[in-house]
Image (cartoon, rainbow, N blue to C red; front, top):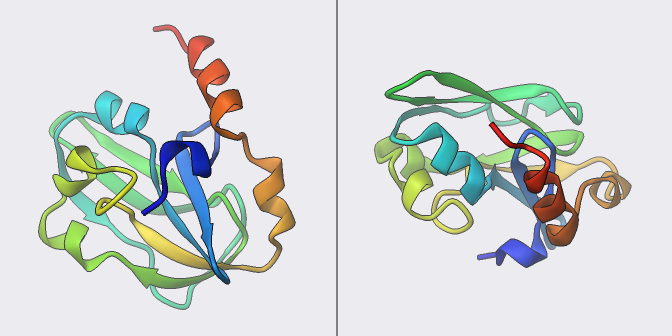
Length: 129
């Protein structure tokens, strides 16, 4: 599983990690702390073609529902069956067992447009409540 430092990040707090020809996608540790107790994950449909920045999934907590955006354009190639059974995994291990879906990116160049770990940490400092 990817380390925080190996992922690329969106301003909406999704992360992507290129794993061979596919990318794993999840939400950041920061996002799961903000969302708190996750009780439901609506995964994207397998085979769905998506664009970078498109809303593709939903995560619900006891507080509210949150859209999850795809950090890359491409085709959804897998969803994590474990988070459907136990959504709290996303809170416990957002960069590990709590990944949400895999995507076959149509352009790996989009990955370079995302923030790296240091840039994401700087971005978080600007996000005061």
